[in-house]
Image (cartoon, rainbow, N blue to C red; front, side, top):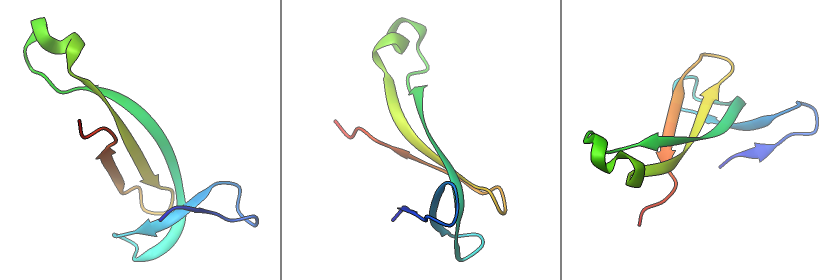
Length: 66
């Protein structure tokens, strides 16, 4: 679970690589999931992307499971 920490300017959460609570840069990206060009405009989904600022490990999670 991500938390904010008043002593650090950012978001901290558990990093599986570091096995510690570390500062993460978190963003939302829109990704196209279809490989077919004619359906690409209908297959865009939001993903939560978190990158550990200590080791660089990057994780992503689909936000919409419709």
